[in-house]
Image (cartoon, rainbow, N blue to C red; front, side, top):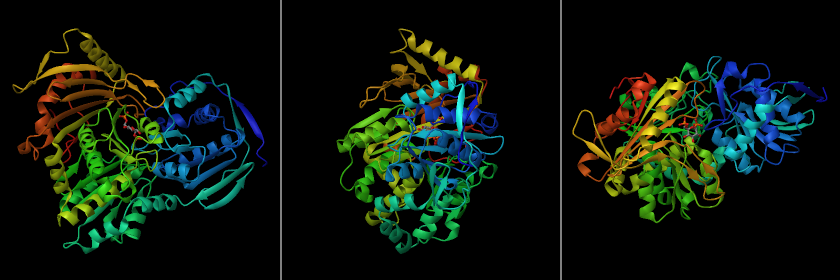
Length: 574
Ligand code: G16
């Protein structure tokens, strides 16, 4: 077949609006006739500068429906004048690896087949995301353009081509398309070897007595081969130091989300075997969790600690750090490090895409989000494996100063130097959208009343009370291009510096997930060893009472609680 182009009539589907990170829906939704084709055509139509002659990277986390979606993208791409695709073998590429490839091969962008940490399989989630030429997720201006096309689309173009064999690496031609299929790991691994001092890490792992034990869990996601290449092949650790490292299209039937609830297999082995350093990554490899024996590092602390140690422990930052940043709900721990180091710090809305402009402008080196995302300007996506190797670098450097130092020692030392930001997030997954929206509207009304700022909110089970300093809907003006993003989460700031935040997740595939974030800062050393749940209880009570969450969502407990120093809290009720 020569690749003759056919024009197929179609009708718009409602709801093809990309969320926090691409379009995520159930596989069955993507499998509807023309559904995937419409969205893919919209990407090519709305691509900045048009699609003619462009080179794109294509890959993803290998979830169910990825091979089929890849073939559709190749054929619609060919019909829309794309000249070349660079694919990961079997359409596998971690999200950070896509970003790295776009940047190192200087392509015009990429298409990622992933729903990240959401479950996979015929009845679960699929996703498609477009990244631009800086390697980062398309900004809102572009995703809004894609959405606009999906609302009015009447036809798409597709080339009549055979399916491509995705299993062989090398250079190929498919009709008018040039194709290169690459090993998913090698380019990314070379980048990490430029960034980190693997000899330093190796020396800590092999020359310390007793030898620290390590466990990496890929949760059956795409990072399995990356983890094996790093932990086993590069650092010479035994096979038992990695688990769930074969990518599976349904992630073994579990939720590939590295938090205390879903990464329980890691948590259990770390506790049982007294493992020094445990770490997990998510389905597509951009999230991470750091967990050592008795020590869970909140993502908010993790990015602050990486920022603090970076110049000392990571060669990439030896020349200095340009600036730091966090998403709005992330705790202010990184702000305190920035202040101490005299660095700029930015507060952006939730979504990695908001960091890209700052990095491109040379004002941001290290940033993170409470949602288990940590990264730097080496690429334009958050990077789970990078964060894990960064933490091993920190432990290696810390051991030079204090032999035997573990995660807990690094945490405690940090809090003693900077104070501790207690942080917790409650996730109420699978709520009815209507109730969740009504709760947010209720809060907006509460905020609008003239006497809310200055009022005192009381906890329900103690005498604790908090005076409201300000309350608003977070809005962000990008300092580089001036674009404005509104309605990015409702926050209450209290006079003692504590915060309560409510957001509706933008990454779910159906219904609504309510996220409640609470934060309290302390410089009282006697509190540092406390379970955050204890320190934050009064604030959580205030949050539940002011929002009437239970009434609006009909939920009396969250599905997941992210909190420091405790094990799985799935059934916790405040
Ligand atoms: C995505 C975004 C992140 C965001 C996270 C949570 O992560 O890339 O920037 O923090 O979603 O978003 P939400 O709270 O709206 O669910 P991922 O790992 O799902 O791509």
